[in-house]
Length: 379
Image (cartoon, rainbow, N blue to C red; front, side, top):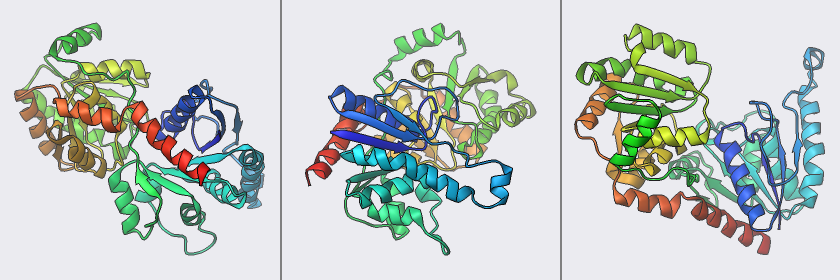
């Protein structure tokens, strides 16, 4: 089978719609399939090893002169069309990720060529969906034209239905969690923490891009009360983004600067070590579809405290008491919940590992996508 992945991102970018197409390509290639990609160049620069050839489509469509002439959109569409057409003709199935001109044209061109198309949606495509009143609504057309649509979470699919985007041939497939994230009991947790050079009695962890929707500001503001109750507590925030300096300023203003560590961008191996070492993973996000980082913490044996964003609520549905929920944007409620957990610390329950193996491990996720591929190509 020749599988074409069309995606706005690929590694080393760390977005979900970069990692999943990369993972799916690797798994299918290991099974003997032929893989090809069409993607925008990574924002992080450089490239990562891929399971097949890639055609890069520049994000920019020209300089200021071109934009002034208002032909940038036409140039962008032509570049996308030129890159997609030969790749689609070579493919047996086209797997399109997320939205945007590249993704939407890929669905429509593939269907015009008579090729089966699976469209995977990650969150923002639905949370911020608004049908266009004027001009072509490419996303809505692509959504309905796709042979099959998969969603990153059940609540995301429910929201699509509420918006009038109900359709047949759709389902939720959760994101995969790497085998690098394995359960650690208290003894191995202490060993990993020691290896990281962290000697605090209590360790809180957040892994997320530093962005307003990630809500790290509320977590840092909560730390003042947490430290009053539990002075020997450290918060580690892994990730980078436009809010770094602002968040450092919030930590200084709150008087907790010495208790907060910003690691910047670190690789998955390091993330796995922090997840294993932490007592509690805290996800104060305002909006989430399905936060893979929180599931990685659960896989490592670390319970999760999440705000009541859709993804956090869904994790509570799946994992029960190992995922606690607090109201979003309320630092004092967050602090109280953290304090309660630190008073009753524990590792995750056995049924959490069972749910992970059933829904989130790479073999389980790959098998679900493979079933759809076989169904579409054989139909």
